[in-house]
Structure formats: C-alpha cells, structure tokens
Length: 228
Image (tube, rainbow, N blue to C red; front, side):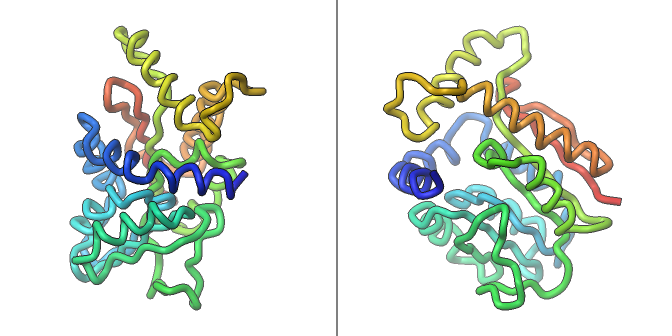
C-alpha cells in the first residue's frame, strides 16, 4: 500500500503543488498554521508530510535565518518540488522519510542541533494507519514546552455545507489511491473523518490548546497544542 501511495502521489505531484499553492484561502491557512506553531527566531521546526513544500517558506519566516526548518515526506517527485521551492534557503532541509518514523537521528542528512520546538502536520494524518499514535510520537518528539499543530480537511459544519461537502467528497474519492475503484470496503470520507477526529482528539488530550479553528469554508480544522 505504501508503494502504491508513493506512485500515486508522485504521479500527481504537479497537480497537488498547484492545489497546495493556488486554492482560494490556502495561503492564509498556511500562514496561520505557521503562526500557531508559536515559533521564535532561532527555533527548530519539523513538518511531517511536507509535500511540495508550500508551508516551508512560512515556517522559515518564523524561525529566521538562524533557525532550522526540516520537511519530511515519503514521495520523491513531491520532495523534488519542495527542494526547488526552498533552494534559496540554506537552513531549510527536505528529507525523504516516513512521518511516523522521521529520519531525525544524529546520522540524518540534516542532524538537529538541540531540541525540536514544534511539529507541523497539514493534511497528513488521514493517510496514516494509526493517526493518534503518530500524534503521541510527535508530542514526545517536541517534549515539554514544544508545540504540535495539525491542519486537516473534513466535512464542513457551516450552514452552507451541502454544496461544499459535495465537492469535498469528490476530492476525497479522487485523492484516495487507486482512483479507479467504483466501490470501497470502507467509505473513504468516513474513514478520513475517523482518522482526523482521532488525531485531533489525541492532541487535545496531550496538550494545552493554543488554537482550535476552522478555515476554508469550514472544511479545514486547525488544532494546535502546547506540551506541558
């Protein structure tokens, strides 16, 4: 399944990059997600599942030239776009790896000097087998005083939700590999909702809330927590 997903997202890397950067309201969301990380100049932040790197410049703005930004993703064509997007920054590093087993040890290509101050994960937990477990690992990674921020797409609860959710459901089905299936054993949207609920609930259990918001027509849920 991992190989199948890598091939799928690699094949559509160009389209995802366009969506990641051009969707109405998405730049404002990414800026808000970076702000929710509560970063200061000189801090270190890791983005799990950085995709084509749309968030990385916003994170770099927060940590400044003296900080460190690391983006992790498992799909090579996607990472190539992220590297090109951040080539001008010598303190932004893009690594190939699994968000549930990030390559952050002393032998990693971009070894971290000191503590990790924040972890950001946008539109990632719905792809994981154990999203709550991943959130636990990310909380342990930043430790006391660190911040974990999640942003994920789920059905809108706003009064105008029906047409928005119809579009959302179509996107979910088309972005669930393989897209050629007419039937799924488990409804993709329901499975996605369950994973997102599990991840955001676990973060609220583990951390003191510093952000709990919705964006982009109520479709995107942003939750940020500070570890004590």
